[in-house]
Image (cartoon, rainbow, N blue to C red; front, side):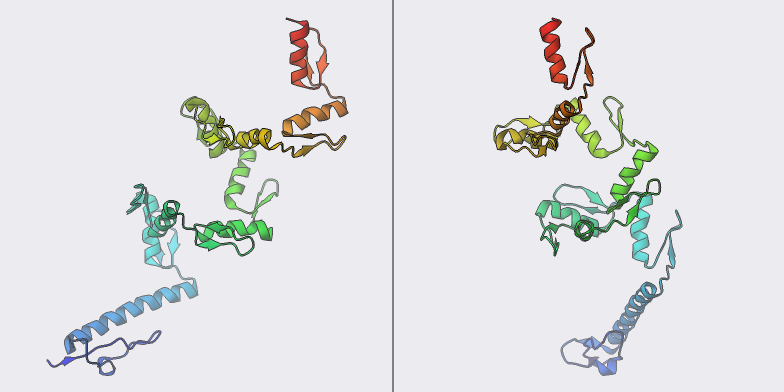
Length: 281
């Protein structure tokens, strides 16, 4: 066979025959050119079908485990890994594995520090588009997730799930040391530090370490002198919300702390302790 020279002359959804694709430089025979075009037609046909499924809403690919349906076979393959547990994509930095390549790419940004998605309102940047969408609801005030028990609304589905545990009493997170159970994973993690003695939060001023970030923030007010809690009765300010609560009992005349020796009552636990040391020891 005389060789013919082939270039790709396709437009968006057109495949043209070999007579329109002659150009010196490719080196394919007529038979090879015909085979190439046949393959191109098949590929384009598949792409066209995928495009049509997206437009029509058709989902021809069904999971034989749970029945969930998909517009593209590739999405079905990824979904089925939920059932099989297969995680073929591995992070070359830490070895963690993932069911799909997109999740691996997002994960790897933890190591690279890459945050390609930026908020056009405040400039804050994120490693994946989903987190950006959630963040933007802070600016828009959008709360599209509603609790069917009390009607309270939330910007994120995860926050709604955690909230609903108030109503259900569900505590899915258990401590493997003492068996105590918690509604939230973060609360369990904090609790476990009682057993491990871990104190990951360190003060940059004095080096003192804490098990909880909130305790570090409170401690740092010793150095900064910040007193964000003010009494609306007298204007006195406090570094801790608990101190404000105790102080406000003076104005209300509330004395919830009682002495078990003589029955005298006090507004603050510290005042009760001082009374016991003075009169009952």
